[in-house]
Amino acid sequence: AVPPHPPNYGGLVMSDILSSLYEKRQASEDESDIIVIEELATDCPILHDFLRFTRFNGKPVVPPRLGYFVEGGKLLVSLSDSERRRSLRVFCVSFHDGCRHIESHIAAGTLDVLWYQWKEKNGRPGKKSTAS
Image (cartoon, rainbow, N blue to C red):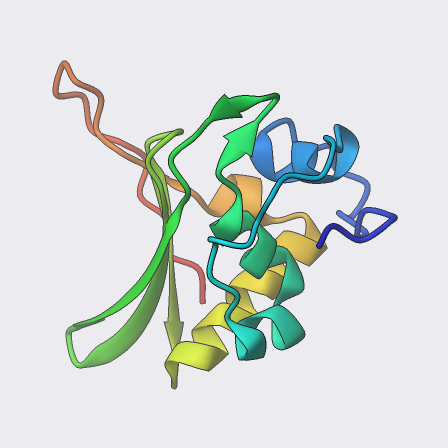
């Protein structure tokens, strides 16, 4: 469920689907077929809503993916947004800790500068970023 007021984004305006989740609230849709992850919904409600977001301004969108992997002996949790061709990776001690870190970045308004932009189709390198 969308909270009635947007969280404090540190005074920054986020002009993407995530911020529009709060700014352009749409009529309620039937969400009975979309999974609810109770622990994530309780501890990281913004991230949970973002992961369940399947429509934007009435048009279907590909929901982002949340995952984890080990790199160099360290655990990373990643949030991948294929609609915008970007990912965010955070080092963490557990998967749930990584989710809380991502939620914290969203609430602090720092998410926009932490995204790793995927390579363009013409092969140009994307911007690399890993949050800690």
